[in-house]
Length: 262
Ligand code: ADP
Image (tube, rainbow, N blue to C red; front, side):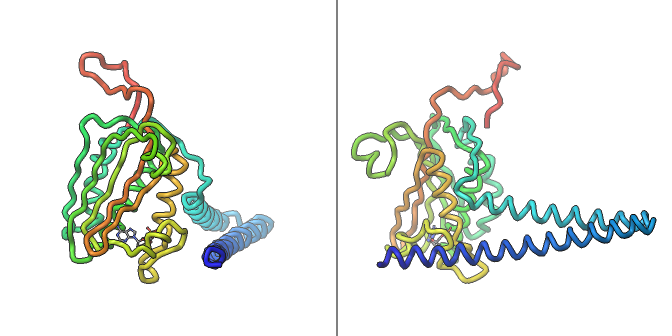
């Protein structure tokens, strides 16, 4: 009964979201349709010079609609991923400035990357989104400040270890975001991946961050794990499948013979 109740609460939230989006789309379509009508009339009247600004208005409205569909796609689990061979350490390094800025001066950011980290095979922009989401959550859990550690290490998952983590046997790169924040109660952990589940005040949280991270990890052939200690902090680990091939990196003595990687 509890599961059904939770399911129906989820459906209610999805209903509210889709209702809101439908409303936004209706407004945009009404605006574009109205502009087209006016343009047709001005054309008939030979008032060609007045048409320009309706074209601009309509094309801006269409851009707004495109931005909404982009957001919907990002929330949708069925978004098609475009995985490429990726060096997670390089990706994290490239994001450190953004992350440091996003968490603010009260949070000390550090990284601990295995020097021989395997390449992974993931969608780079989705991984960037996921990582930023985890860092913002960590910041929110440390209102008085604290430390945020991003670490990366290689892992062979087999037998009991693989099944405990819900992973097919194989090699993974573990990307962990650890904070020294509030931690989560078992009730929050149980619902943390649910779309629209949030403990944050209205306007602060959407409840979509971890659900997107979860969807991304699963679709990439990996998983996410939450380890948390109430009052002490939280570690969230993304398990990303190892890329079987070698990552080619540019070498000074042989320019040209490289594959573009990140
Ligand atoms: P949002 O951040 O918008 O609330 P999320 O899906 O990202 O949505 O997170 C869901 C909930 O999980 C949060 O509201 C919070 O209660 C909890 N949570 C997520 N990350 C952490 C963390 N690092 N420390 C403590 N609680 C967290």
